[in-house]
Image 1: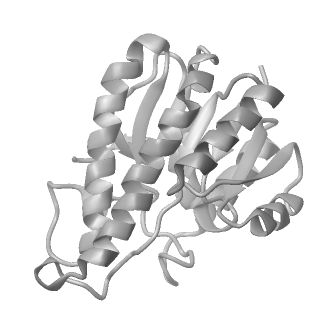
Image 2: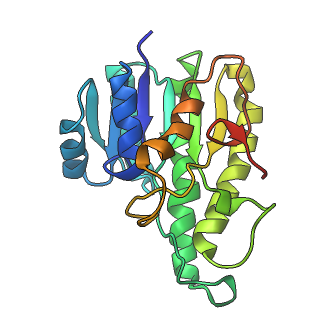
Image 3: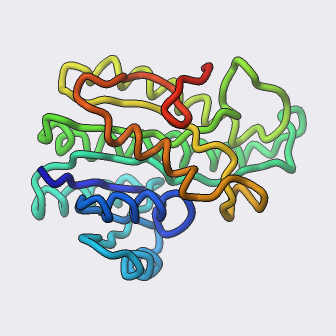
Length: 228
């Protein structure tokens, strides 16, 4: 069965590469971005069945509008990739943080993923084989956490916690929920020097393609577990 896959924050970077590879594999991809024009431009550059849609993950109405649209056009979603994120705040420390920046990061990186998941959950349940992939980061791992980058770090730690809870609650619906770390990737957010974006997308695609008896509630990079 051809899958219907939603990717948030997909007009550039890892999200765009994930959308490209899913489309190349024959999936229908719903490429979303806050700016509808940027979403359309990104979708036009990808071969395959790619639909551009506006989605502001920080706006409940925007998430609800997308859900209604996809209910009418497809009636289900098979894969949700929660990729949208902001504020890789390397300039900050927790002891001197601008809490306004922290609040904005939580609104998008945690609550945005949560908000979109809730809006699209009925459609994921309609799949019978739903997959939710939360794009996290090892920077949010308590096992190796140090100082610095507080807004991004705390938001990804919280996203990992949400992953565990959703996985436990949705297992009975056949929905697998996992967090993945793409590693340090050469994107606008990651900066130069990281691994190629295609390698960073590998972890996301691995989790999206898991079989029904695959893991759920885990934290992975390149298909291997990493510490929480």
